Image 1 (cartoon, rainbow, N blue to C red):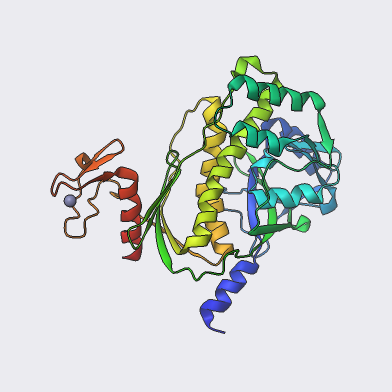
Image 2: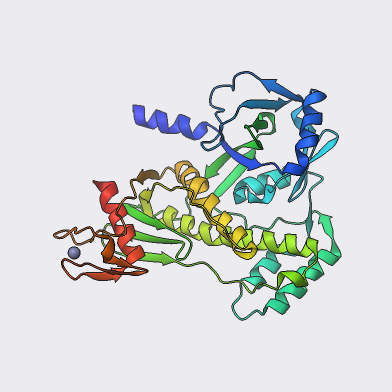
Length: 361
Ligand SMILES: [Zn+2]
């Protein structure tokens, strides 16, 4: 076995950690758990249990009894005597699937996969979607219902309850859940492409192949009912549908990559300041969660190389090999026009091919 093989295998054997922000209203409950020593402070994280990047933990805790954790619904879990509110349905779908299946007490609205599919069907009106949401809320949550997501045929996760951690930063609490994910390739074709990705919101992604082929992914439009027509429960369900829809769009990018790429290059991303309206927020958050963490984690699980490249100038540099003229004026919105050689194209496609060129080096 070569060194790189053993490294990649041991890396894949490590569970991946999913970090969820705990809602502020649950902080009193957390302090209660700490006081009762149901959450035990740990001085040093066990090796390999480093929290994900982005969460600088000041103090970390583990559960004194891992079986004390039970997921009740998409936003509520019980730890011992208290309830902890967080967006559990924002877990990557294989992880969410594993967690809900391991939680006997889990309850979900009836018919959510069908409701999501209906809301994503072109031609639906906001009034029709509102009626479907209200009907689901009226029936209430019931046990034995499938979650919101279409199970992945390729990725399957197993939840590791022994490794629940709570991280406390200066101002916030985060829950860290561990999963082991397996990948099963569906197609037997030998994949040799290297692919550059331009990541965004619309398009979600443009994939540029070495042979010049391009594939553009656009988000699915939803018919969104007016918020003031909805009860708080219905509004929360709408929020989950929006998140789930954004995720489903993002996962199509992943499915495409697992079929077509042996190595993926993408830009280094930065969290840009965003002030978004409610209806945009959940979908955008799903896409962000995907771009920032789940994309690289799942490519790693699938054994597909992933490299982030410096994004500087990727959308303003001419992609023509004999030109490469870089100027901010080359890009006007979505249109690219090279001021030096006159090359014209779609700015996102130009971005994707420049990411590929930069990645291949
Ligand atoms: Zn040019």
